[in-house]
Image (cartoon, rainbow, N blue to C red):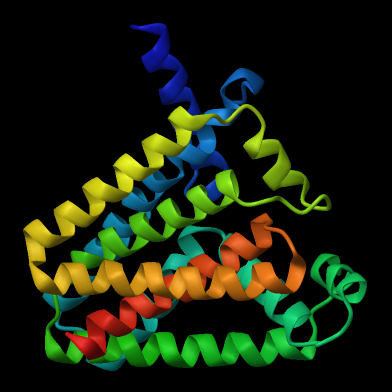
Length: 256
């Protein structure tokens, strides 16, 4: 097999090992391929989205009550990612809502203890996510669009982590960004373009609205948190992914 292909496959496998919680046959790590993890991050979204979509179809096939289906689908992506992005959402919410000076916000961001604001905001998130999915289930929406929502949110996160100044305190973001070049950013743009085109192909205007809402939600969340911290990190990326996907779900369940 071509060495180039082998490196990208290894980068994808390493990305799977870091960004999702489904058990893998073996643990693989190669420092020479870690710069490929961010370009492969959107591909992890395909796996998460397909399982999410498959679960929605299975629950519908089984005739599950809409409220039960919505509850399961609302929390399923958090389990699939090992609560990784949800953790970033909670930590970032706790820090930005403290409305304290930058040094205090950075300390709160890294504090392992759960603050009041994070508890409040997780309740708000779950309530809104349940409502959006319940509407989608009740109205019989196209749940295949979940695949494009999860892919485009990770395209946005990968682009942000490769392009924006990284916080010095963010070890993971600095590590993942090392060695990335223009070709890696171009790869993410290509993946995003394919996701948008595929969403439009399968669902027309509805697909475009869903991915558009995801991008807008991510961009607003990232711009707000970036302004607060003067840099980007893995926690901020998780925060923006969570909010971006919530906006995509609202477009799926309410706006379409």
